[in-house]
Amino acid sequence: MKKYSYVGISFVVLIFGILFIPKIVNRIKSTSVVKNDRMSANNPIANEKLSYIKINGAPKKVPEFAFLNQDSILITNHDYKGKVYVVDFFFTSCPTICPKMSRNLVYLQNKLADYENFGIASFTINPRNDTPRKLKKYAENYNVTDPDWHFLTGDREDIYELANTGFNIYAAENPDVLGGFEHNGYFALIDQEGYIRSRYDASGNPIIYYRGTIGVEEKMDENGEEEQITVLLKDIKKLLDKDE
Image (cartoon, one colour):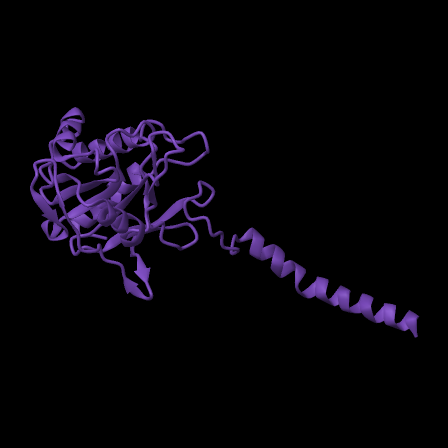
C-alpha cells in the first residue's frame, strides 16, 4: 500500500509542477508581484497621472490651520485657496536635512517665478525658538522672493498635530538626535482646492509625498534614492496648467 501511496503523491506533485509553476514564473517575469515600498528607489515613479490621496475612500484635504508668518501676519489654509502649493516641516537651526530642503524649495520658487498662483507653506517644528523675526531672517538668507511663501510658527501642539495627524509627516522633539528634533524630509503637493495630490509609482500606488532631501544636482543619495524635485516640478506645472 505504501508503494501505491508514494506513486500517487508523485503524480500529484508532477501535475502541480506542470500546471502552476509556469504561471508563477510568468508572474515574476511580468513583475505582477506588487512591492509595498512606495518610496524605494527600486520602485520608480512611472505613471505621470496625478492621484488624490484617499482616506476611507474620500480625497484627503489639508486640515484647517492658522499660524503667524515671518511678517507676523496670520495665515490660514484659506489664504492658499486657488493656489498650488508645497508644504514642508523644518526648523531654522536644523543642522542636517533642512538646508537641503530649503534649497530645493528655492529651486522650485525660481523655476515657477512666472506663476502667480504658486506658493509654499513651511511650518517650523521648533516654534519656541523660531519666532517671526527668526523666520524672517531665515527667509532673507535663502533669498525668498515669492510673496506666497510663508514661514509659519505658532502653538507647538497645533503644529505637531498638523504634521503627524493632518499630513502624516513625522515630526518630534528628540534631545538624542543632532539638532534636538527629528522629522521626515517630505514635501506635500496641494492643489487649488486644497487636496493632497501625487503621481503614481510603477506599481500603481500613489507615492503620497515627494522626497525633499535630495537636490537636482545630486541625482541620487548614498542610499540609492533618486531625487524627486524634478518630478515634483513637473507635477506642480500640471496642476497650474490644469492639464493633469
